[in-house]
Length: 121
Length: 121
Image (tube, rainbow over all chains, first blue to last red; front, side, top):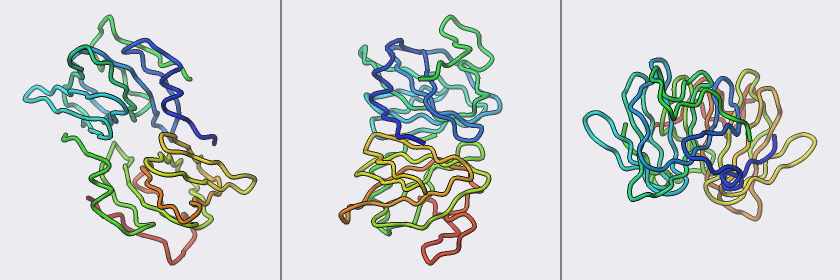
């Protein structure tokens, strides 16, 4: 029940593709991530996933198109839909995600970027 | 699966204390609200509620204290905790809320500000 400053929390970690949990809302979690480059194609069979861009431009790749998501915008990826977030021109993009606590980082895909645990900050 | 621009959505309505729904994430919803002045003391017995300040300063009153929540900050009000959002000096504050779709606007309290339905925009 204390205010959480998103920029301060983002400043508290540096590793890309390593989400950190900042809050819990019922069975959902709020996580922050820094990303650069391309992630991994995956989907979440049972969970929707909301991305909010806090800094930079996110390119959310779907199999049939790519959506450009700018600072101040959100996008919801519905359950079961394959997606692969990326950034362009070496830009580090800052994200807030809102998703179930049960959501696996890369769905059923195992990858060297896969994190099984999101540290709390 | 399209980007949603938060400022554009906020520009699409003007009435204060009338939340509008912009997205659904599993059984949760994302709503936007413009607020000015003081709301109503209430709690949500079964649902947590997340407030993100997009513009201005929110003063979240609890029975034992008030938290100042600035632009770029979030605060989570746990289920069962009485709260009453307000703004100061006539400022209109823009909020994004994450909460269950089942969350009643003013909990069990009936008030002239109570909205039973949040229009989708």
